[in-house]
Image (cartoon, rainbow, N blue to C red; front, side, top):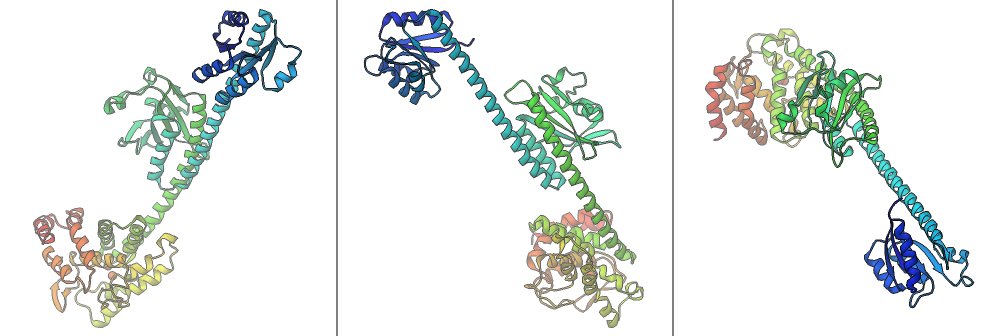
Length: 527
Ligand SMILES: [Fe+2]
Ligand SMILES: [Fe+2]
């Protein structure tokens, strides 16, 4: 039986005493008031559960008191008492809103029974309200999970997805930390890319809580993880963290194969994770499984697309030993410049594929010209110069995804010049996209810094066949500003030149070529 706080309101001291004695004998707390306004003052400053009030009193009567008291505390229970039994019938009193009615004189037992009944009803009402609140909280949580699952399934980028899962799970589960592991069955390991501010971790399958869940597929829910024999304290020691409660579950794909483990650590505001938490985490893991599978599939498709393009690009370059690797290097230079110029991810992707494929049109140039050693005749040069148009024609037959639809145009403009004297269309700087201008700089830089078996020219002056000294290359690039090249692109390229040299030091660039000149390059850049 719960202890109630009861206010007895009656102008007859003997009646008040009788009621007080009875309710106090039942273990309830009790206060008294001699009239309605006194009672109201007490109600304003105390938390009463039940009021036992007479009807006829000086000032406010019992009904008026009930009305005003409920304006202050709507949930308050009322037992009305009266000696005027002919004037007040049970139905009328209850009809006015009272919870019960006691006629005077009353017995102790009658008071006891009625207070007991109301107390029980109040407890039930409170329990129901609590259950309802819990249900509403659960409903809210389920709708949050649904919302989260929508955002997870819409996210196809693996890295972003990983972070999103961790952040959302931590919040939904009211945990201090979340770890998400992918199972690598081939290496018998689990690995995590990000565990909120923590670097990549790899663990053997079967070791630690996550490793065990990955191996067995069981769910582990404990309030004191350190008591488990397979708990690994290394993480706590390394990161000055104290793992207490842990809820860890496997993640499955659509075929019910185990692909990962989701673990929440340290329930906030509680000793551990309860049954509801298990239900919520289970719902989350099922969405995580689907989201991962979608992301893996897309990743595979992207890898396959990427490797096809790279193979195609390398095949074209490999037709001549001196151009092997050309498109790959041009791509790297383009990406460096584009990042330096703060281009967004979509532009980076477009420029990457345009650079990889920019010379694919050379596929249509006969070996007799492409592989010729020595200077080309003007007819041969004209034939070579058709390759950007061929590039565009070939690429326009490709089915590029919507985001890459500009690749053929950009790729075909790599020999255009900002003064309109380039080819094939003689477009000017205003007509060329920034990506095309970046590609033009990267392409010339690689041609000048690579050996060719046709001579390099500057204006009409023949410069030779070998890779040019870097100082000369920079001079040519700078001289081309405003005629051949866009000034902003050249500036950006010169800023990332040391990075480009270091990337191919010891492979495409002999170490001494880089080391001897890098200092002068940096000096030249700062000119
Ligand atoms: Fe070209
Ligand atoms: Fe090229």
